Image (cartoon, rainbow over all chains, first blue to last red; front, side, top):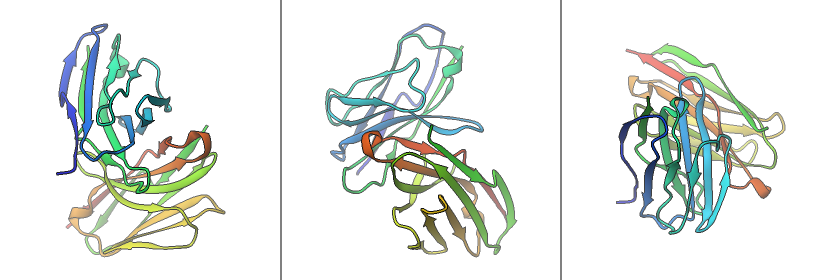
Length: 112
Length: 113
């Protein structure tokens, strides 16, 4: 089954404790992206990657890092999480030709 | 800065009504406009529009793009309670920003029986 998986689905952590949210897709898609969703603000793009070792900033990259060492994986790293990073995070992927984007199930992160 | 604005922000209707959701945008190097439906989970894809004036249709949903006036509409006819969701509009940029996707804030549609 074609899918995008994220782990963990829920995470409560404390300020400053480094964390990684994993994202994996099984569709051999070149493009992957991370979004955060906050009430009243819609989905905002954090980072995206056009292919392995190619990443670029979206609209809200501050406080986040990404890496794309393999085509299927695109982890999101918060080196020093802060409460304003409490949000619902989505990973997504799509191919180069068909631009339909597949979203993962979301990760709800709370930073206290 | 790229911008996508949706209106209305929320809408309450009764089953059987027809609704029109609006999306206007200002982006550099427009590539495509996408509509998504989000229920209590991840967004699901509805339509992608790249050319002006060509209607995309799927059942009771249809959408059209006007690249001159920089907007799109999503129509839902004969609404059902299952249409209750947040509808998201997003614009994909091309050129050196290819891959950048800017979303609007969404329209919350509630359909009462």
